[in-house]
Image (cartoon, rainbow, N blue to C red; front, side):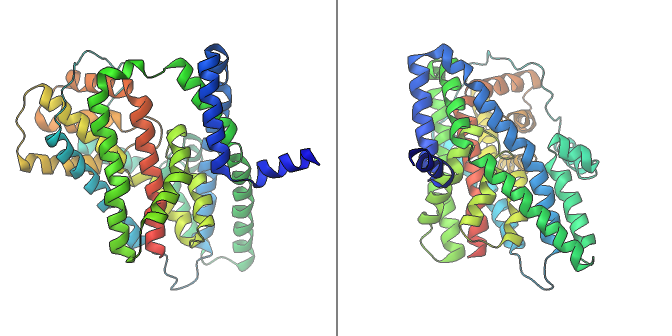
Length: 398
């Protein structure tokens, strides 16, 4: 009987509570036995790999089935959701500019980042995005190219829209089957996050972050301001309701997982499950959530802006209000092209630095600083990005 109760608690219990228990146990193991904690990285790696493996298939199948089975003249709220995504990303960049002016940061540019090739201009970013759209569908799924996956899924969905009803039923059954597999993977989150927390605390710790406390304070403070002030204002304007129950629910159930996986793409299944729990329209969120993981990048816009202005301040370059506004636009557009994996936004910093004539060598040192503080910065960034996908989707549905 006791084993049955434990099994029921694991499969039916509150996932957030289980994740918190995993976090606490991981931190304790790291402090008691660091060597053992480092070995637990295999649990975290297995969980993140499982999410990354199932997410491309889930997106492809769900989007295809959703569009194919969409009823005529059905309203899916996609236009307002995209508008919210773009508005939120731009306001995040603008907030980061303001925070950087109020609390200017200077860096010691001694770090390096080897083996990285940043984009050389906004045209290169757009060119890359264009070619991702026409990627081979099998390669897109295998490589996690979500722009290509979305393009092919939308195209096939439209083609299947006029298919026989039996074909649509088959697509629907496949989407439900893949969704069931996703639920199984998500139930592994407590073990995966236990491994991620234990190995991170044991291997990296936070002692080396002391010299970058000011930079982290500006970054994290800006992200928290977006999550707890700007996003609620946007939701209130859209829904005319108290936004905080929705915002806090999304931070708790999506943000916590994203904080430790550090991948918007890997968190897509978690967001899908949360949208289902919130009883949102599946035809809408099956498209908006994968799309959000690609273009809704408020945290990435903040990272690009703050680190770029830190380099500007360090080099003593004057910035006027018009240049700051242009930086906000460039950071927002660049953030939309940020990768859905950990640290994806950092490689776009040289692009923004190019606005101020900062050399690529100096810009790559700033990227190196970003990798050093990435233990916290990238985790908070991903939590903001991913949880906001559900916030805006729910706001448009309401």
